[in-house]
Image (cartoon, rainbow, N blue to C red):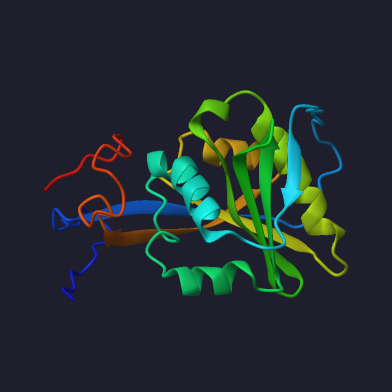
Amino acid sequence: MTTIPLSLDDYTELPSDKIATVVTYLEMREKPQSRTLIERDDLLLRKIERVDIQDYSRLFRKIGEPWLWFGRLVMSDEDLTKVLNEESRDLYFVMENGVAIGLLELDFSIGSEVELAYFGFIPEQIGGGAGRWLMNHAIDLAFARPGVDRLWVHTCTGDSAQALPFYIRSGFVPYKRAIEVADDPRLKGILVVSSAPHIPVLA
């Protein structure tokens, strides 16, 4: 592994097969008193009790490919099955006319804290109000657990430009930043080269 010193006051040049994003961490210390409630009779939130890895991976890829989501795609089926079936992890699919179009994953493994681990919709659903509907469910589910006093999430510059302001409007407060450097998953064949054109392929 090549180690490159990071400059905190200037540019740091990366190899062309690497990508870098700025990650923003946000938290919510209590359930918001005022929220815009949206009714969606066309959508159903289905808790997944027994995960079909192929169904999950297809949905994960369709939602995340435009934003270079790859963390779950590099895991073996065995490891992914183990993670998704953890007792402390709740997984939901958003269903429309019997078809999965959205994903919500909450990680309750840290006691009083809940991580909004994954949250997203297929590209065709973005911008139509489904995100607000799902976020309301996520907040309600997180704070319904006894003893929970913190819900947190992170997003990065690889995600949709709408993500960060959406989380802030939802009541999350930014509290930390980090820089994430990783192999470009498109060059590894994990995602197609045309994924995430806002992050150009360099090699």
